[in-house]
Length: 331
Image 1: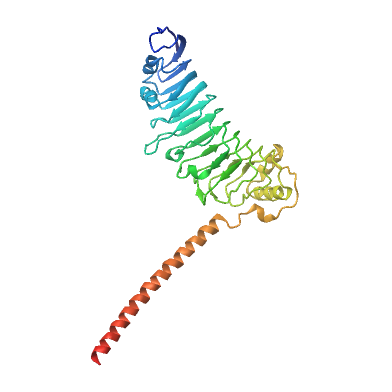
Image 2: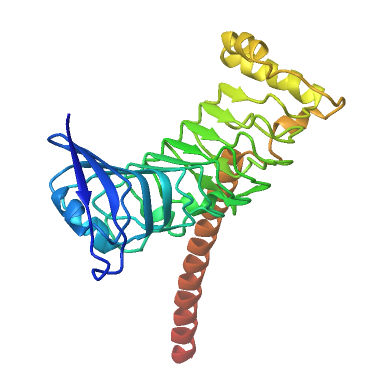
């Protein structure tokens, strides 16, 4: 890697911006840019236009706008570490966007664009909610919004993200995870709500046939339904006031799927409890997802059959009326 140290001394008459040291480390496809104070250094951004990966360190940027990312013409991986980046407009050409310890308050996803983004990683920042229109990121595999200020989640916000493999919302302030009706994530493998403030977790609207890992450690949960999550093996539960009867039922259920997993859960302290006496039915949803689907399918079939019978009866009545009319004419 070739290092180039550039000292830019800007006159006070030019934009009114003071001087600063800017260090850039370059190779054929990657650059580290240190201590950028946008809008002051258009030239440095422009000289990085042909690079695919750009990493800004200790930058002071009020808004990463479309104008900013348009200057990085070939960039598909954009990373910001430390400093301040208050607002970011996601560029449709990006494959990876990382914001780490940047005090970011707003991430803008505009509807109607063909976003290429595969991974969105926002950690140690100041987001209070999941970015609006996040379900526009149709190609995304990984969403990590960790160590932010989020208090409420609606999983339907992610509806339609059929390639989603991981959602990590650990170390926020989440008290509620809502689901409006049935929500399906066919590829979701890893779901993390560790280190939040959850007291309840309603999973009965979750249709997640590939969900293997569920991390809800360091919350305030006593129990939740899991038996309808057929692929679930790895559950991280430690530091919750779990119900003892529920824990026993969980151990039996997981043990049937993967006996070795129980030993691992015991080793890391997942199978501990505080409160006794819970009905076995708490492991199950009141009506399982599959059963609900079958009920809906059966009801639709019965309605369709009834409509067909009505049409047939209507036709028969019309024919009968024609016969009656003919007889009346003859008389």
